[in-house]
Length: 513
Image 1 (tube, rainbow, N blue to C red):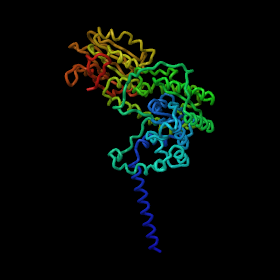
Image 2 (image 1 turned 45 degrees about the horizontal axis):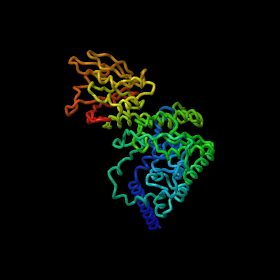
Image 3 (image 1 turned 45 degrees about the vertical axis):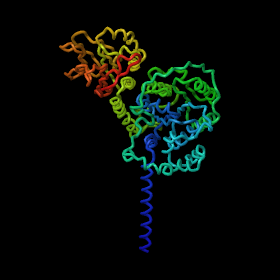
Image 4 (image 1 turned 90 degrees about the horizontal axis):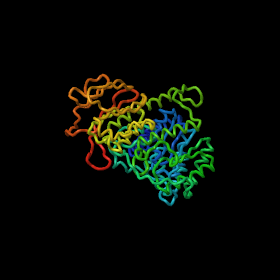
């Protein structure tokens, strides 16, 4: 009897070892992007009032923590590159096993998609689906999206698909996950950020339409039915982007579908949400950069608060069905407290001044930028637009004629102080002496030192922050930047940018040294 028990224990121990070994191998070989995007979704699913779905234009264009900060909206961005309406449907159906949102905001791009156009499930969409655990709905997802039995098995059991990936493992696979900070939204790696100047096609009238793909319409109608069955409001959107005529016609064709179903549709090809294609685009594929994403996110936040019954949770006490408990509220507030530090870390790493300026279009930061008298930056129209983009529209007239003024003045101090009125100040360098500038983060001394050189001193400092005006190669720099955290009033970054090819005709740029 004792021998049998001993043998049984050995077998159980062996099976446990095999189980944990398989678990470890599975976690190591599984692509980390899925867990990094979806980990916070599973942790915060019960709190979510709004879910965003769609393609990469929404993934990189809607920032949930900005919605929490400014409107108290609890949301998650489940959009992913490569999504089509068919995969959107299954993405949402899997997500609704964990969350019961009041509103779904769905990006309606790619309404021309048909099954014959290619694989129904791309590598990119696995960023979401790999993380969903095995369930009846995931089985149904595989049955609808995947025809090949081997691919289907790898979809349901990721170890089958990724077991050979051990050859590709790097040190990153053995380290901690780089969890997506902003609830599923994509903030590009520094080296992939940009400020593009796309060609802007003529805008067609909303009456010009083309037929949508049958599969796209079928699954959009399934999503509409799913939301109605579960009592979830649905807002259809087409994000702002300078798209061609065929995409415009497809975007226009969504409106009759929405009208017939009785759901809202916002076509941002015809709605001004503040996005300026000259400065708010990341690339030529229609993706918004960080400045554009904040404008688009802000517009959506205002619209959602005005048109849907979505509570502001920032002052919740735990009383009532829809109120966050103190513990859950602390999770959201802790995430928000860390958010400016995360963004400041990205600003510090950005080497190019044009992208750097687009990152400063953010109420969490107060930038102070000095341009010396011989800097070509203020004379450059593109940089004038980028600097204007840091401040509200109603204050941009302070830049009128700045190009001409920059030719004759001694230099300028650009200040965007979020807590003062007006928030934007352009202060010319005095010809002699110093003046005091009263700002929300203290009194700044600006002028010339005893040798006549530009002088800038921040509160409590005796040292001239501008130095001798030369970079490490003894070339004059074109801009000195000082970025303050609007909450803590602390200086989070100081950079000096040298103009690249200053004699080059056309738009210029500057790089940090």
